Length: 99
Figure 1 (tube, rainbow, N blue to C red):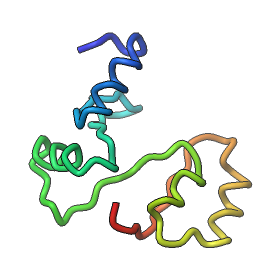
Figure 2 (figure 1 turned 90 degrees about the vertical axis):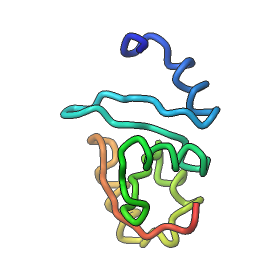
Figure 3 (figure 1 turned 120 degrees about the vertical axis):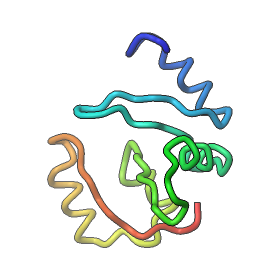
Figure 4 (figure 1 turned 30 degrees about the horizontal axis):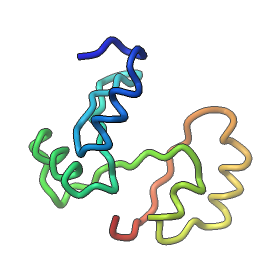
């Protein structure tokens, strides 16, 4: 395991090759993968012994980044994002297209 914050480029290489990366959060460690790589997504389900009907969370760096896989971003959600995005993390739940 690499020291936290030391080798982000190493983690990026792992993710780019369908690998998994542990990421510390405020409360637990998360398990990250490239959501656009089916092989990587399968590895998440297998590693967590998670049933395939149980959806995963996809994190993005911006609202615009989500437009590639979210069915519809309502105008109301865009207003909330514009009002609160600079305050920190925001959590939205939307139905997605097939990634």
